[in-house]
Amino acid sequence: MTLKKRIIPCLDIKDGQTVKGVNFVDIRNAGDPIELSKRYVEEGADELVFLDITATVDGRKTFASLVRDIAHEINIPFTVGGGISSIEDVKILLEAGADKVSINSAAVRNPSLVKEISDEFGSQFVVVAIDAGLVDDVWKVFVKGGREATELDVYDWAKEVEALGAGEILLTSMQNDGTKAGFALELTDKLSADLSIPVIASGGAGTSEHFKEVFEKTGATGALAASVFHFGEIPIPELKNYLKDQNISVR
Image (cartoon, rainbow, N blue to C red; front, side, top):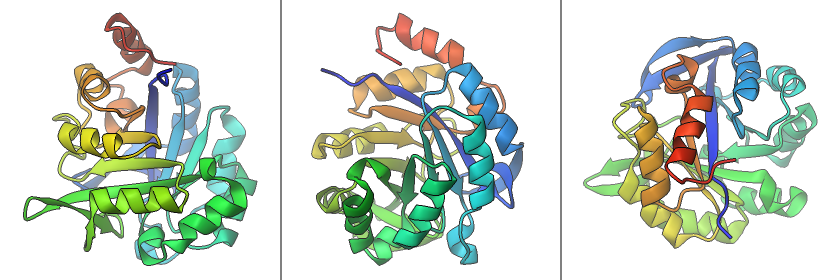
């Protein structure tokens, strides 16, 4: 049985507002997160991802109150990330209404955190976000909102966190992010083939065809985008109808 493909808008949050950048920089405002969240539910988004993009860099926790306000307005699976570094942080966000948590920098710093969260709450609660950037033609893991390269190879790291209990990978190609030139197909395809857990492709969506491509040419079970949804460039109902017309099974 093939999983139906998921269309997932992403709210990148900075100072309580939704923002969007290109290649993780040149940040601009994209609107009120609560209003956007409500709109996405109405439009038929399958899930929603909320990433507090400067929490780790600023050394603070994700806005639990904003998470609570959004969770109150939506009825679709809700993944929250940014500044999570302990089981206690996870508890606070799940109590605030998150369905899953996404960890990136904290997992790299302390891989056992993946296992701890998985053991405590179940693997379905743990999304490991991987920000992938090319360093000398090798895909490396980046942390701190894409500001810092690590020595970790993306493929090796993904296998490691899967073994530790991650239930899903959110894979963002920093090279493609915000460019609207399409997803990183080769990277996404190899990673999804290497793993037995779902992979969400992120970074580079610019047209409906890009979603078709990532679902046809890779094993990604979800595709995430931000600005093309926030600014109405690709309305989600139209995208889903288009994918259905292309014989791609969407929810």
